[in-house]
Structures are given as structure tokens and as C-alpha cells.
Amino acid sequence: MTGMEYVYTVYEEKSFSAAAKKLFMTQPALSASVKKVESELGLPIFDRSHSPLRLTDAGRAYIEAAEKIFQIQKNLQRFVNDLAELESGNLVIGGTNFVTACFLPRLIKQFNERYPNIHISVIESSSAELFAGLKQGMIDLVIDSGECNTKEFESLTFFTDRIMLAVPKAFAPQNEPAFSRQEIIAGKHSQRNADRANLQEFQDVPFLLLGKGNDMYRRTMEIFREANVRPHVRLYLNQLMTAYHMATAGLGATFLTDTLIRMAAPNDTLDYYLLDHPLLEREIFIARPRSSYHPRALQAFWNSVRS
Image 1 (tube, helix red, strand yellow):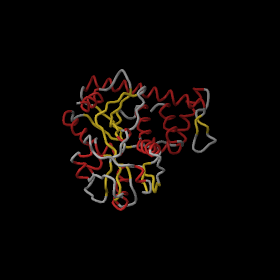
Image 2: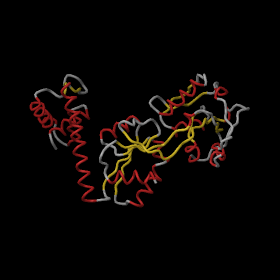
Image 3: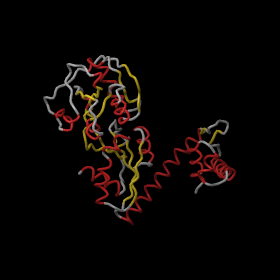
Image 4: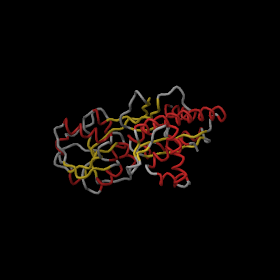
């Protein structure tokens, strides 16, 4: 490994001891390697007076340059591999828990049937962390349902979800039009004349909402605001599937996508309501960095999704 790689590992681990353990080397040897880089640079990279370690101003500039160099090296290696191996290679796909569970299996199966020699790795995380990984070159493609910075990334929409209000029967108002799971599977909620419910009729119902930083939180908060409803939030959660199971246990109402409702295990404890708001339709898309060069494995998966 190079001195730059040693420095970057210390930066990632925020500790010389943790970095040395990860690199299978002694801490004094790692410290000496980093000090050599700092001597060549002429300034310290790490502020050692803090725990965990902090970067100095020179250190931040060094790490930013290192990441650019690593990305250039990675792109060069990919280009060489493509020339030598054509359709073989590696592909790292990132997605949120819901998206990877509901959409990725079919996409990977379809892709592997055509390109069996391409090794695929899957990373599940939040949207913010996924796009950070995409920007840094740690992830090749992201499948998501939130917002995409079109200046940095190009996206391809391949599915549209409908978000519905799921309410335990014990909390369901009597006069609002509800759908059953079977009716959603049959697509009755997608008909143009499908009955809509009034969100104000649910303002006394306890809610289970996804937390800040989640695309669903942004959507639901805006919908509540426009309906002039202040929801009583019993729990903030991280995953749609968790919200579904909490709702089926009778803890409160939540917002679910029709895809999840169709794919979840049969359950008759919830009624589903269609609300009228443009934010309740969301696009599922695949995103990649805007670049003049994309590895063949990445381009092949992109084309597979497009088709």
C-alpha cells in the first residue's frame, strides 16, 4: 500500500490503533508511515490533540485530493478490465431497504441471466449515504425513490409507486371510502374515478411516520401542512416495512406504498385510503454519476433496467 492509502485509512477509522488493526500492521509502523507523508507535505494532516482524530486544514485538502486520485485509479482499472474482459467485471448497487427488497431481486435476476459473469454487490443504506457513496465512487448505481441532484447524477425512472394511508380498523372512520388489500392488488385504487378520502378525518388518529432524512417524511409533512392537520405522532421509524408491521399491530396509522401492500404477507387488520395529492405518487429511479465513461457492466445494467 502507498502512504496515501495509509493516511486515508487513518482518516476513515479516526484512530491510529483502529487503522493499524484494519491494515494488519503495528501502530508504530503506521504512525511512522503517516509522519513520512506529513514530512513530505510540510504540514500535519491530523490534529492529534483530539480524540477521535481531526483533520487539519492541510489534511482536508489532502483527503480531497486523495479521493480524486483514487477515483481516477479506479476508472483506469475499470477501463483496462473492460478492454480485457468485455462483459465480465464487478458492479456495486446501492438502495434503501424498501427498494432493494421490492425491486432489486427481479432486476438482478433479469441481468444475471444475460450476464452471469458479472459479480454484483448490494449495499443498503439511507439515501444520503448512498448518494455520497455514488459521488465518491464506492457505489456504481443507486436505486432510490427520493430526490436526485440532476447536476451531478443522471437518472432513469422505471416504476411509479402510489402512496396510501394505512389505518388499523380500530381507528378507521366510518364514512371514509377504504380499499382492501385485495382491491389494491386488483388495481381498483388506480382507476381514474377511485374514491378519495379526506385527511382531516384522521387528525385524531395516532401516526407512525418515517423520520427526518427520509423521502417519505418530506412528502407526508408537506401533505399534513397543506391539509392543515397536525398529526399526533406516536413513533418515528426508519423503514417502511417496520411501519407496516407496527400498523398491523394496531399502534397507529402510517403511509405505505401500494407495492409494499401487494408484496407483504396477507393481513386483514388494515384499511387503506387513497388521498388526493401529487406527492403521493413517487418515481422509483436508477441513478449514476454524470461521466463521459461508464464501465460496460454499469452500462449493461442500465440498459437492462431501461428495457
